[in-house]
Image 1 (cartoon, rainbow over the protein chains, first blue to last red):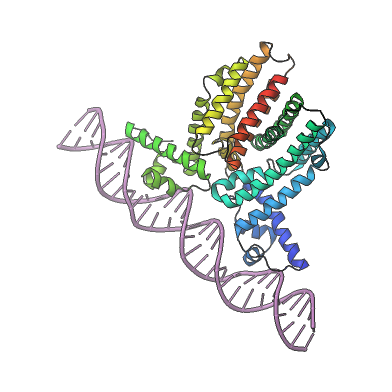
Image 2: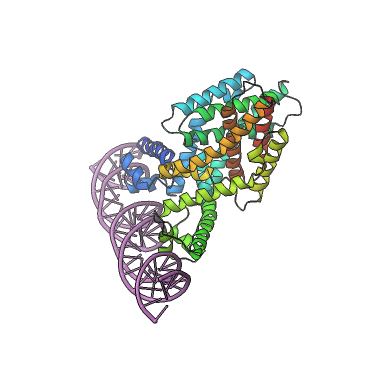
Length: 198
Length: 198
DNA sequence: TCGTCTTTGGACTAACCGGTCCAATAGATA
DNA sequence: TATCTATTGGACCGGTTAGTCCAAAGACGA
């Protein structure tokens, strides 16, 4: 699909994705034009289509992968472990710290998925897959908790992970509307309390 | 701002808002053009600007009010009461029933707020106010629960209402990405479990 | 019936946007 | 050096969009 890249080409491509990711996070897909991206990255129109032959939609897909990677990395090493209550606590703190330090509020993945559903369903499915992968890691953690006896044996890891992930995404949405980290903290504290009660 | 309306005018205006609300829910603000709305309501461009002199942004504001009203109404009589666990259970069921019966997934208010933050901050603040009103009703319910001794005296109604509301909004977001009611049910069950644990 | 205000129709515009295309340049390889 | 490919610049285009404008039609009270 994409042509073979030299080191310079890869750098340009990365520069485009990174800048575009930031702009899209701030203004949404609809609020960010290719010309905005072109201006901010000091590239030309032909470069955009050289590196992303599929146009804006393909670029958005690349942004999603980039952001998914960044967000998941920020939750490590806790996210992959999540075997003890301490791990969960550490995870909560890592999430709060990460999103609190970002230049813009909200979740780069969740907001993207939300917007794309209505305008680019195929790309939305791709973003949704990233979200489901993320939730899957939480489900693995819940399962570990159950298998070590911290949770009732008849706890439902899938349902619980959905609930935790919903709290996270909802907290991030409210974080964006309220321009404050408070809702995310309250949401995650609530999610952990729910887990402990299970 | 808006001219004086006769009965016919009010009916036309309502028709525009209702149809536009549905289209925006399905395709987002960016995915819905004034021409789409004009076509679906069999009106003319001048009518759109006659009833919404502020243009698309003002129409979006009217849509938000319309949807807020519809969504809050669907949660009655539970939402205004929320004094016993039965009320909360009834509320949960009413929410699930309402969103499960809608022609499109997701929350008409949350998704709107999410999109507007990046493109129309002033209008986003208006939508956020609707959300905060909604959350305030939940907070009142939590307070009632605490005052009747169902909750620990040192429970924090604001934090708990934020957590419940985040679960709700996150559940609705996942409902839209997964095209299934399951995440909303899991999220609300989790939120109620969290409340009981408090 | 007359006059006024509301309602409606639809042509028009200016800006924007995603995408195409062609030509020039830089860099790697042989 | 010669050549092939990757990279870059930027003009250009067709379609779409929000918004404007003017005039006609309808409603209703005096």
